[in-house]
Image 1: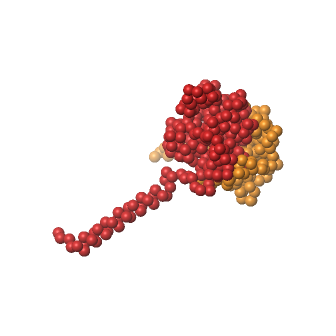
Image 2: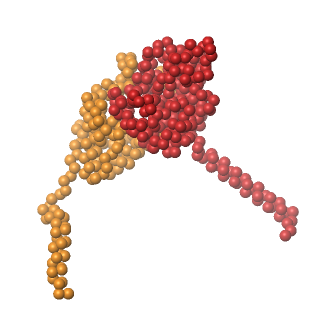
Image 3: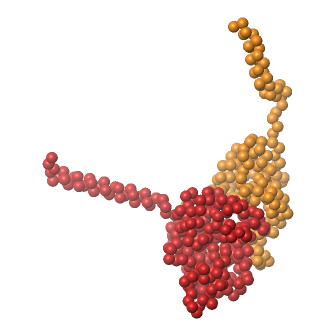
Length: 186
Length: 256
């Protein structure tokens, strides 16, 4: 055991060098760079408080998806009593989408996930969401909504799908109990 | 071993009770819903459509319903027919109803296009075979699809006797002329079909094809309501269904 001295000195040096990044950061009191999120302008509330949104947005997205597609529930009542339409493009991307207009409607950038999602997902090494393989990454504006509304053949005859709440169409008014017969399906 | 008459009767009684219990258990199990989805009930909506072939025949250049459907749902126009995606599409009358004509009526019908769509059957074959319940029948008669859940196995396409389902062999986005941001596109590897514009029904609007038909050749309404427009039309006109003999109970009627 005459080599004890050099062994321990070597070990100490090894550990010190190995943990260099950690203790250097601690001494210099640096903080890891946080992702820079661009919050939507002109909108203060989300459907959940920011803290909860950070933790549970994936559960909320799944809840919205299941309820809308399978149970036909189209409105979500937020924690503060506000009602939101259950729609990824229509509600989430209204604030968090990044395509501003109809100019890029056909471009491949529609399939990229929005910067707002990507910033944190990349930072934390979580795979990029593939929602936008189908859902359109577009910030809807009044113009785009109207330009790509569904009334094609006779746009002048029908009300715009976004302008206010359209009256029930006569065909459907006669049709009996409506909109959410879907709910009784399960 | 000797059994007295009393013991014999006791054994008989216990046996009968056991058999009764077994019956009750199986009856309860089948009543609790496995495999039974959305049986039509009185007072419930069942959406249906009637396509007036005579009106469509009068102006064959009119493609308003097809255009409106494609626009509303981001349906791609893929030139390769093997990859075609169909929601609302056209087919010649004699191919749709090969037995609905004879020597002298043939000229009246043959060669004229007819609009076809998912029949939203009362007893759909496609929903039975789906292994993931990505397609199912809603209480209001719409045969829905959940593209999130579709694994692209194409069993439903094999089961559908009407060819109303299409598989996305390629990414459809490059083939969509103008993307409608109000409705998602689909992705490569899922099956899709007409959804009776359920997103519009939820808002109280009729399907896009019905709304955009200037000639009012498409009549949409509640088949369970005897006073609805569609029931009135079906009372007064001769209507046929596609393949009624296969027993799926189509909700789409053709007035000829």
